[in-house]
Length: 225
Image (tube, rainbow, N blue to C red; front, side, top):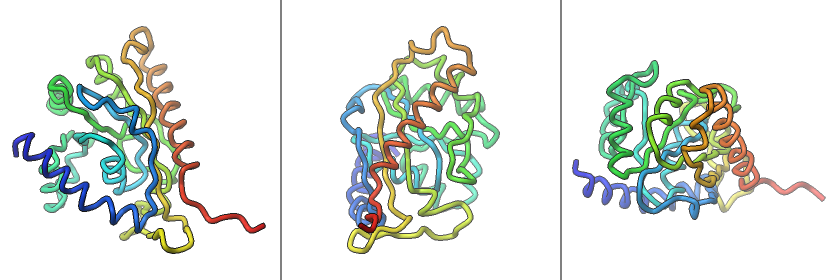
């Protein structure tokens, strides 16, 4: 699928899915003004649920190519969906040479790429440690890095549940409400003199800040007076 067709398909998908997710999961988001409309951008987000790519895609003002594990391709429908949205598959153990090069190629072509540096969905809702492979990518790219925080997706659809829990706008809020917060860009030069440990720790803090902001955005049940 050509990039032009893939972009039109993404726009159609967003137009189709946005009303459903907003209504049934009370989606709220902020920070879209921080995203450059053109040029390469690397988005880094926490990973709470299978919902995360959908929530991020609906919250961003431009299309992002999602880096995903090759093991997801065991499901044919998911394989087709990720390919149609021009996802970038990587080895389940981390960045292979091919996966790293494909990500760098996308950024060098001025595209935006979204990644989950934890490498897998959280088991407890908390932010995990970032995989070291992300440091190699950041050292080799020269594009803005934007931290993203997701809140509520773990409550809505933890990895132990087969189906998501809904929290429709027309009902009293439940634990299934979700929110996304998009942070300000971080210039890559910030990490030129950082060690890998320092870089990963700083990026993790930036994502944690956005997670807290997203949590404050969630539609919640009002406390009884």
